[in-house]
Amino acid sequence: MWGQTIKLSDQIKRIDFLSRDQRYILSACFIITISSIAVIYYSSMQIILLPIVLGLNYFLLSKLLVSRSLTQILAKMIRPSLWLIIMYAYIYTILSLFPLAITWFVLINILITIGYGAMLYQDIRVEPRVNVDNVLSVLLIIFGISLASLLLAFWQWPTALVMVLVWLVMFFTALSWLLDFTDRPYLISSVWSLIAVEIFWICSRWINLYHIPQTSLLLSQSALILSALAYGFGGLYYHFKNKTLKRSLLFEYIGVTTAVFIALMLLSKWAVAV
Image 1: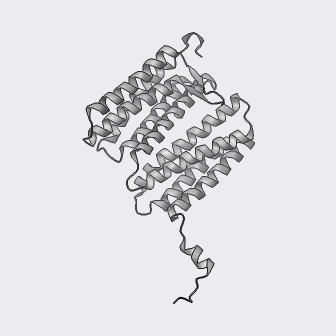
Image 2 (image 1 turned 45 degrees about the horizontal axis):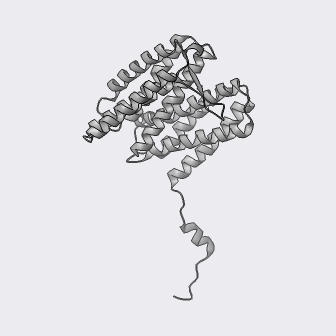
Image 3 (image 1 turned 135 degrees about the horizontal axis):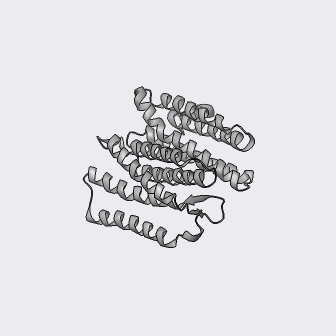
């Protein structure tokens, strides 16, 4: 017994740093990062990234969720696909507005991919972490609505078309968040997306874009307003459904939402709005 030795190769095989699902996610993140850099920065055919994103998401989730139905797999595809499509359209717009060094472009793509991997990991978990889920959904709203504002202000897209896209993004973002804990996700998602479209339409009369210091990133006023409302309404509804809503939480969500809304209204430079 004491003289028995174990080969180093056998010891390495016994160490399992990552599960099979995590290895799939890391492989997909690597592929999507390389593809996005090549297509967006070095190609004039950025539209080909769309089938790559949708195809990769379907293939990956069908491997990760082998026991789920096709409907469930398609539902889980929504948020990761929206994240990549929105973020790549957003970064392409920023690249068209400002000169962006390849180093910064690669770093931004890596950050986008980290968000994508986090969404995938949340989708395959039996019990997703609520706080992580909330942060990812709020980020999706911020960049999605900021992109919509840039579509109006920079690309000059028709307002009606952008409104439809905003409704779809807000509907599917809410739906993917509500599916796990409510029995009426479609109705609530429809109401929320309608409210979001109305607020975005009002804000589109005076498009305020905020420049993040030391970066080339732009965020719109309407994006920050809607993300604050999503944080407040979403938090209240989640705790109400789980019977954990307390007076302190009620004041917290209402207070944060109100404070952000008032600050944005008072600090906006309406005279120089786009």
